[in-house]
Length: 387
Image (cartoon, rainbow, N blue to C red):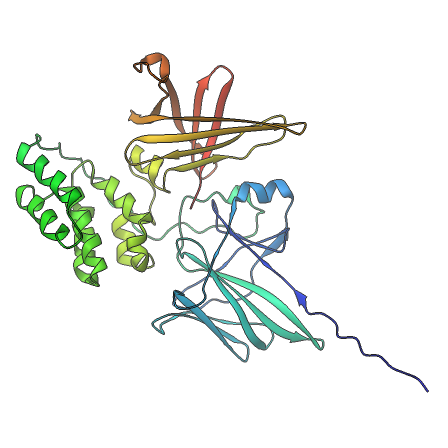
């Protein structure tokens, strides 16, 4: 008598590793870099181009943890029927449809990048009598500013289709009015129930006040008045005030505007899909966070975070032969010409020219880089990091 023992073979599984923070690719398993499929008119075709990548290439991509779409807070979902995979919004609107090469048994998980410009789905197919987990990702909105040189050359990026508007000459800010200053301070301190009236009082004194326009848009969006909020953002986009661009950049990353971030009108108004037009936009256009990838005993790891309030935090970390050295800095920054000046004051002393470090904005392949010289022994080149 022959005893035949059948052993269940575990399912082969690809795992989703996250989205690049500086380019469009995503990571599958630990070493496969893939380009997401482009979406046109709600449809994606073909299969993603993937290549094995070395650890240094993957490090330059700055892979970020994705947002898992589960539970009541999920914005997206996906269903599989036959070979058709359909990604939908919570509202039921179809985001993208795609034909898989094999019939889909079930969808496992849906992931989005932080700003929901890319979405990935893990799903199971039955192949050769085994369940296999596959990963597919889509680029919902084409974005600029990424560096294709940091990833394997797989797909030639297409230039953005958004027409770049002609820059307007900023109008000088009006002299500060004591009444206006008092109204702004009161609006910033107003309770939630009184904030709208307080900011409207600011606009009564200065109809083009940038912060008041922005704050009102946030309040209206919170009240589900999307049309009014969008009108306020578009008004801000048409403003010639020098600080208008600062609030438009703020809107790109403010969680209050997450529901509008995939809206073409919103993206056009805040400038998400066009090249930076001013030094401020070059510095802050991706959120004000810049990074340099470190290499052992050679190049330090640098994290530079710049705020709209003109303050910055800088962390420089060096690792060599098992020893780690970390230096934190903080100070203020300002734009000077086409560059940036970092001021690192000594505690308890008045800042002077000796405390200033120049940073030049330069082109690194297809995106901006910032070259800063803190002293003779510390200079670095950082690239913008998408958060």
